[in-house]
Image 1: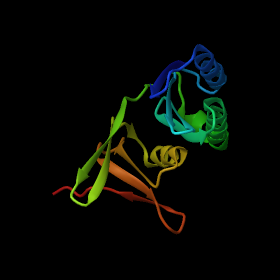
Image 2: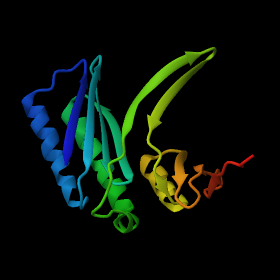
Image 3: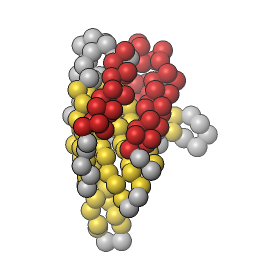
Image 4: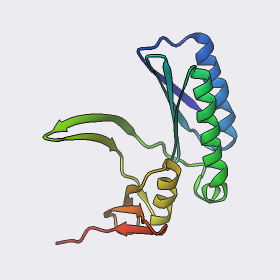
Length: 174
């Protein structure tokens, strides 16, 4: 697994870097191909925050936590990601292949327009089925997910409805 550590207003010690690599190495058994992990560390006052994102094939696994130490927050993130993987193990095993592609994701931007703060996130749309998009949405813990429909090539959105079912928005040509 390729690991990238980003730190904001924090100096990453060799011990912490080794600890992060050791913890993330245990996820190698879940991914048959190459996976990329990004760990973001930041400190605000006395709170230390860790955000872990693992990109494996078409799927993203993400967790973030705050604690008094980076190691405690990292342990909570590892537990959360492992729980996501185990919860969806059978569905993921059908989807993950040896020829996985690592998606390109860029950072977030926050812009102020009028009375609203708008957070902008850019990412590469990947062709997938609605079922795969729902699985990815659930893995990320989001309420909606945009994707390129593999059958039609259209940009579609799946979302979780208030009654627990799922919906899909398909753009109308015209």
